[in-house]
Length: 254
Image (tube, one colour):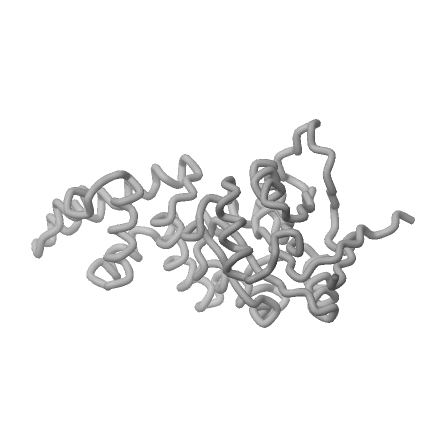
């Protein structure tokens, strides 16, 4: 029997997609839910402050001043112009999703739409079976648990608050998204360490993406590559820690 990987850290930082949840759940359930409900959400919330803020972020992400974005330029009180503006917004969001964009505006809008699905019970987050036992064990050992995902913080909280295992949000002390920075840039992991008031060398990051591994390692963090079904393969050049199951890792305080 292979001995568990033992690391002495104060904090475990976890990715979601491909790490604690099957990538297929995100792509086959959550993303289609957004496409199916996007237009209705835009119509029903068009004048809400939350959606107006997100539409502004979509413009900024596209390199436009909000006033020059087509979903604002064509906005008016007439039903025809409103429908035209919604057409522009819907088309732009579909283009972003088709390219698997990680932009802040898109992730914020997805979070708003997922909120209705999670709260109604139409969505329930599915996790790998090893996740909850690992969280329970690490938490019992005094490890601080945090999430870093490209999904918005709202989406992360909804995801863990409405799982097939119940509400798991009490396990986590903090959530980080792309407002902290790109997951492929070392500066983002430095910011997380500073915000957590923990030295990077006392944090372990779990992810399935090599570019994220590379960025986190460069800051001095421990990194464990999580190999799950349907994940992209790691490059042959990667010789760091890798696991197929979170139970293969023992986390202890320094």
